[in-house]
Length: 249
Length: 293
Image: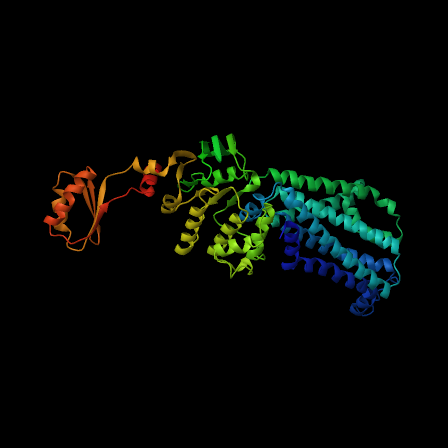
């Protein structure tokens, strides 16, 4: 047993991997389905005499519906799973077991970060593939390059979100506090992106990039956010290692 | 010296948890750290293990960091790991060489062979404490820091821990904090008494006990004790005679020599049926209470 296997076992035995992948796959299948039949569903629910007409759904609507649902619930699950793995000081006795046996806190943080981020990306990829398949079946073909690029950008956003959670975990003690502050931080970034010209530079822009790319947006629009996400991820992991190493337990 | 500190101080805001502690723990010894709640024992162990940093003072440990193991008083592990996995992880983390069957060996010594493949979430507190000890010794550390290692164990488990500590003497250095003073008295070569962050005494156990020995005898009788008490109180070599119930007497004496001559005579003259008779050995608890009161 080593720390890499410990993190994998944590994901499997606590069913967190199932929750992660299950959430994304669920929305991957239901998103395009909702987009395809939304008009029919609302038509049956409509008031007598009132007729609601929607434009005929296109493939981008299927992917957009998936992203709309998964980027909220999925992100919540990712942050909760990441906080439970990275807030290893939450219980002092367990922190003592790990901290007194490693040469550096980096030995604890890096496996927890990489395995959790990998699981989050795996969940997103599984959900995206489900949404891609379902969209192709129900609404028509999706541009391959745009879809793959969008998935990569979405994955980069999750990698950043997990890194942010790692940094917050080095400042907070509990799992709930770590998850809460991380989600608040991501929400703040999203608000900043919506309200200020900073939006194209912020990592949160990448969360829904796949929808815009499938609609025809050029990938070059996202390079600023990619750059910020990469720099932010590296910086956040370094904060987690340095600040976590200085913490007294 | 395995551990030596000079003026070791730890403050939390205005509160002084440790105040100029100068600890000296010889290599290969078993050192007992005693003190009332809040004396600073856990803080001292945290500083020695590197979990906290001192506010002032110097600290030197002869063993490399990864050859040091700390066992907290209530060890906890991820509940979804098995006992075997916890010990295996402990060995891997310290990079301990040696045969893989060492894991089975330490689990067997801890009495956990049958529970080794069960998840620790189902372990009792005593089993967790024994698992903690197994995980601590599994890496063959040079220095063991044990915080109340027998506090959650039943008498049999406590005996096993004491035997284990005695077995480690000379092979590793052990620093244990304990409230169970009889355990400290049994296994430790040296003792340190902490109170309010200050080290009141440090040195060999014998020196601590002998220096504070109060001559007294303990007598247990099967017959009535009143006539015996009356005669004893009339002797000029007794200082006090306490009835402790159930035929038990504590006889304070001016000197052990005088008691050795006079006590059997008084008991014989009283026609007492003597169950047992012997000098009171001063114990750590008495000295501890005297030092920390």
